[in-house]
Length: 114
Length: 232
Image 1: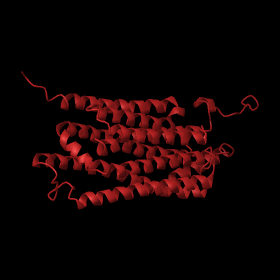
Image 2: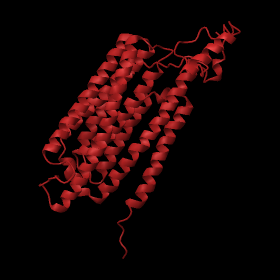
Image 3: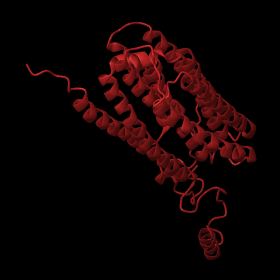
Image 4: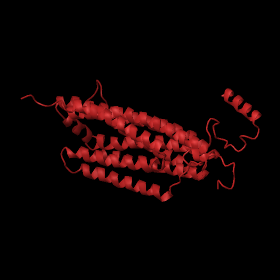
């Protein structure tokens, strides 16, 4: 392609492609939807079982998996350039900082002096 | 705006053959459509990052108060109608599917398909907000709206205060979520018009992609809200 025309614009400087598209097959989206439905049913089902303190952990774990599925396939991060990955990952890193610092204080205030 | 037009005109006068094959929607400060697409989606991801932290703070507060009032949280969430919540989850994830399909359609310049999918997304979003409104009406009817008129007779007074706090989180979190949905619906109206006009194709579908990023983000917030507010 590039060798045919000497004046080919230097698209290569920008992640190697001029046209932005990566088109996933249509069935992929229905599969993702199916997976999210299964996980929704699982969330409800597992909440009916008494796992004690684990219930919330399990519910959150399922929600994280659902969020990952949405982010990777519906939001196309899986086919995105590395720069997008950095922004996505670092945003959750900041969220983790927010949670860890907050909870390391508030959730550890109930210890008893004895 | 006129400034930009003038500048663009001047550029053309200076090099009359330089920009003839421009895509009509290529902003002149970008090299090509690929760069424009990546810059705009990256910018949207930065916005989504702010949104993650915005909701993240409220989620953190939710967990802190839940730790303080575990029994009230249980009572409050058991008061919710989880069947309605689950049905609404299906509706919202369905709207994410149609949104993703709209992006797919835009990538292939399928004008009618894209428009139809955006309209379906709007309808499903409206159903979600409508159901939410019905739930709100029920709660308010039962006196569960936090404030002077809050009434919850199923527990001891100590627990009642906690349930009121739970309901404060419930209304704040679902209210902010619903506000995002309403804003998203407004954006959808704009994009339905543009999609119908035939603006989008394989070279230029970034705006629909960005609309999708917003819509899916709002979906993800609900994915966490549903178990935390209905299934504790």
